[in-house]
Image (tube, rainbow, N blue to C red; front, side, top):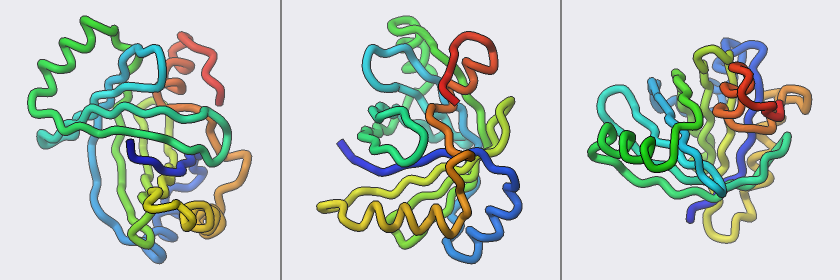
Length: 176
């Protein structure tokens, strides 16, 4: 499994954050994504469908805590997302559906930064510093990004968008 150090936070000003990112990072693309989360015993399983036809099945495990958290993940390209979604929904049940517009930036070729506008939830930033080799560069780059982007402790979120969506609908207490 691949590994990264990640953090999610609410944005008070997406415009200000994007201005900083354009200065320090490299803009990659804008994606319109629908993530369908399925009920699983351990970790999280979601089918990500990207407008334009691309789809991925993503399984991940991480500690749900406020602040930086290590995540182990596996991403599998999917050629028939509608059929897979139907089969997984029948077998496991759908936990939540999250729709978002994601702006993707890269920093130093080791970090992905997402500015997300999540339907019904608001604007967020997500940092993912990819662990390569022994991972010794991960934490310093993560901390550098927190400082450059001005992400404070009170802005950080300790759960998935699926948890926030469920909490918004009153289905789950969701640690926010």
